[in-house]
Amino acid sequence: MSENSKIGKYKFVAEPFHVDFTGRLTMGVLGNHLLNCAGFHASDRGFGIAELNEDNYTWVLSRLAIELDEMPYQYEDFTICTWVENVYRLFTDRNFALLDKDGRKIGYARSVWAMISLNTRKPADLLALHGGSIVDYVCDEPCPIGKPSRIKVNSAEQAEALKAKYSDIDINGHVNSIRYIEHIMDLFPIEMYKEKRIRRFEMAYVAESYYGDELTFFKDEPEDGVFDIEVKKNGDEVVCRSKIVFTEK
Image (cartoon, rainbow, N blue to C red; front, side, top):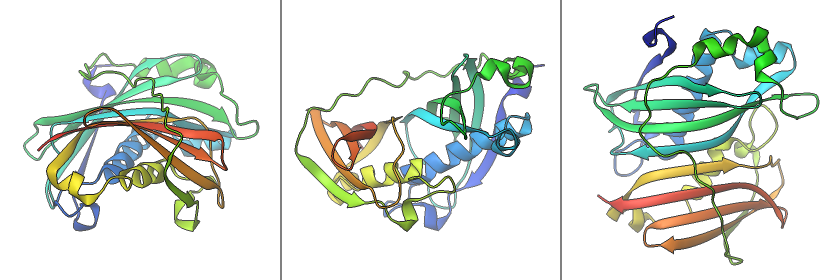
């Protein structure tokens, strides 16, 4: 199997309802596209959600790191490429490249996924899936950005609090991973987005939250333009952490 055949390529358009007031694609929409491409790529190779659900398994996103030179502009075509970098017994590394309308690479992303049992919610052995054939799709395409980092938040002062509502809940019955991204984006005033853009964005998912849970957000700024964020549910249990690096436009 050639290296090129191991890479999935998927084309999109930056629709008007997918951009913010600057006319650029939002981080939440980009995150959705990345997750969809991961799903398309896995399904095309027999490891998609539908196939796994038949055996009571599913994929869960553990970590995500995105680095961008720019975002696609309204109505522009763009392409997302994705490939599997590594497969271990309990998790797999999947990478992405974001290409603009001219085929120029304008961003990359790294992600870590686990396969879990829908019955026990515990990780399953990836190397036992389909006789371990998932390793046939490992690709050595480079991804020149740093891996997701460890995020530590020291602040005890709430930056925001909200209750998980209908629009937060996905088909699995818990808060959608992209909704956390959107809520975290809302922690910053619009002036921040007028003056700066996001250079790097990270998410680390720790636990699930559900309809009616009280979500509290804590934010640190360890250095200028760098923010560490922690989200807890119902007072004390961490559900996710995020790191955002802003840079001048």
